[in-house]
Amino acid sequence: MTQPANETRDLVILGGGLVGMTLALAAAKKGMSSHVIDRADPAELTAEGFDDRATAISTASWHLFENIGIAAGLEEFACDIASIAVTDQNKPGRLDFQPGEGGGTLGRMFPNRRLRLALFEAAAKEPLINWVARAHVTERQRSEYGVAAVLADGQKLKGRLMIAAEGRQSPTRDQAGIAIAKWDYHHRAIIAGLTHEKPHGNVAWEIFYPAGPFALLPLNDDADGTHRSSLVWTVSEADGTGVMKLGDRAFLAEVEKRMGGVLGKVMTVGHRSSWPLGFHHTARITAERLALIGDSAHGIHPIAGQGLNLGLRDVGALVEVLADGARLGLDPGDPELLKRYETWRGLDSFMVALATDGLTRLFGVPGKTASAVRRLGMAAVQRTPMLKDFFMDEARGVSGDLPEILRA
Image 1 (cartoon, rainbow, N blue to C red):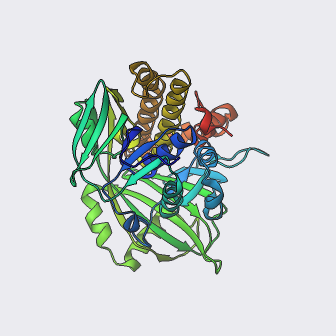
Image 2: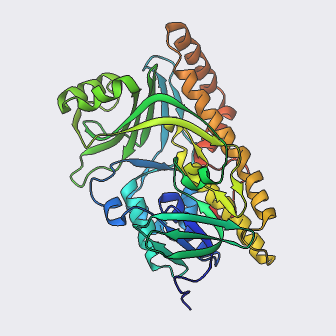
Image 3: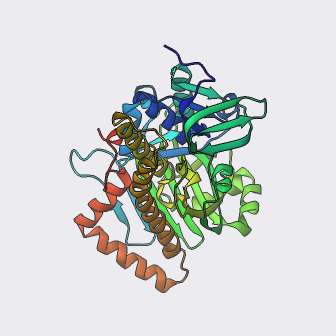
C-alpha cells in the first residue's frame, strides 16, 4: 500500500542530489520510507549542458548501484578506467596502476547528468519515497520524539531521523552547532570536455604541477568515433578568472602544453566550468536524531576522485546500521544506532580526507629538489606490488570495513 505523502516516515532527507537520492533508494530497498526535500528543479539539473562534469565511480559504488537497481540503465554510459598513470610534470618516473589478469577495472566514468537521470527516474517510481522538489525549508525541528521539516508553503513533513545531505554549505549541520574544520586551497578546478586525436585506451592521467593536478579522465567515444575525455585542471585562485576568459584556441594551446602529447592533438573543448576547492571535515557526523552524509560531513580535494564515492560509503554504512536496528525493533533515531554510524564512518572518512590533503600539499611543493624526491618515491612504489595493490584497492573503494550493499 502506498504511504500517504504527509505521513510520518522513517527518514527526512534534506538534499536530493546524488548522495541524498541514493540514500533514499537504498533505504527503500530495506523497507524504509523517506521524505526527500530539495530546493532544485530536477528538470534543470538534468538538462543538456547544465553540468558537463563526469564522475569516477569506484567498484564498490558500482556494486551499490547494482544493489539498488539502477546499474542496468547506466551500463551503456560507463567508460571503464583500465589503468591510472601518474606523473610529476611529465618527467621520467611515471607510476602506473593497472590490475593484473582478471583484476577488473579501477572504476568507471559517468557523466553526472546520466547519474542524476538514473536516480531521479528510479525515485519517481518508488512508493516509499515522497520526493518534494523546488522546496524551501524554513524550519528544522528535532526532539526526542521525532523530526520535522517545515516548508515555505506551510507543509510539515515528519519523520524519525533527519539526514543532512545538502552539500558543503549545509544549513542543517550549522543549525545543529556541529563544529567543522575547514580551509581554502586558494585553487579552482577548471572542468571541460575535450575531443582529441588519439584514443585514450581507458587510461586516466594524473599529471602533477606545482599549481595543482591536471587530470584527463576517459569518456566513451562519440557515435562517430570521436575520442573524448574529461579535463579537471587545478589552477591557482589568482589565475582562475584569466583561464576561464581565454578563447578556445588559447585554452586548447595551454591544455596541449600540459598534456605532453599523451592524447595527441586536442580538437575541441566543450563548455567550461570553474569550482573553488577547499577542505572541510566535521568534528562529528551525528546529533540528536540527525546524521550527516556526503559533503555535509566532509569535503575533500578532487585529487583522487573520491568525493562522491566517500559519500556513497556513508550511504551504505547508514542504511546497514538502520536496517540492523529495524530488525531489532529499534527506532531509526535511536542514539545507539547513530553512535554505531559515527564510529563506522568517522575514522574512515577522516583518513581519506587527510590522505588527499597530504597528496595535494606534497605535489604542490615547488622546485627541482622536491620534484626529484617525489619521482624517487613514485619509482619506489612502482617497484612494490604490495603497495600498488593497496592503492588500487583504495581507488576501487574495496578496502576496510565495507557495508554489505557496497559488495558484489
